[in-house]
Image 1: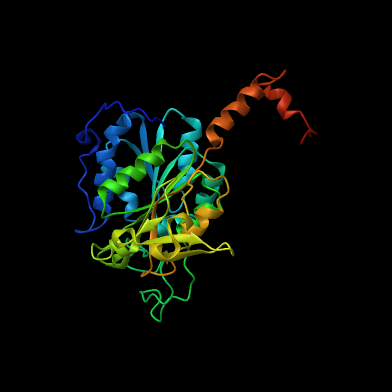
Image 2 (image 1 turned 90 degrees about the vertical axis):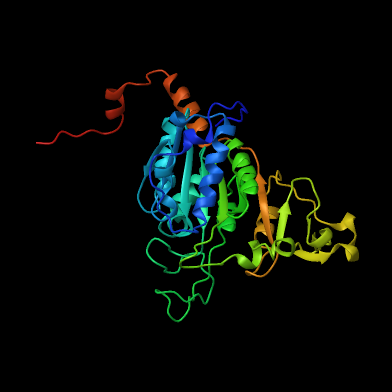
Length: 340
């Protein structure tokens, strides 16, 4: 990936000729337009960019980008994208997935792509429902959620996507939402610039099967009270006139307080570059329901060797060893048998 600011294209160059087939009012439109508007700023070109998806409404995304793309199989987008990124490190590889696609059948593939730190930009559209298959509960649906597949309410404890990513020690983890194009573009830009696996959760509204799922946090009437903007190196403050903040207690727990009661000096200063993921994990767990203040922005951004580079270095070292490349010697390196 590159962080060049040279504009080689316009948004029009990134828009495909395919009819966009999402429900009117779907949050996917806002995300798509944010990505298409951002691409010219990244200095990339459509012919060195790949979008890979799995299965779900969000996974139609590659059709709408005038780039290379693959609509793969359910949950396997990270695995397919890993192969592309390692084999072709010159390509800019993105993964578009949903909460059902990535965290159900695809959970295993997602966590290993993250722990390996494959050079991918992963966008997870989280609408807390299975939209494509018409409204079953998903791995992020809240407890008690009544759906076609849980008529008496879900008894499953939901995944927190950021907790999953941080548990896999992803080197870049962030959250944004589909109602703020500027915020999405800023987060996507930072994710793309990062060398290694970047994971971005996007709160995305499904207005047909789970409408207003995040309205208590991202709705215009709620944003000032409920959205916590994380800025590296800055005290964590939010609310009307920045009157509320976050502190860490002596027990290590994060708490929301009135700034006037504790003073600015006692507020927690956000450190996205902290090597230990513990602080980012605590911030990811700060919101305990759909009606409590929720952090947005970059939770973690640390540097470590990316998988593709490490594989290439290992292959180079192997090729320089005496006898390297001798297929016959490899096949006869251990015991052999003659059959018949």
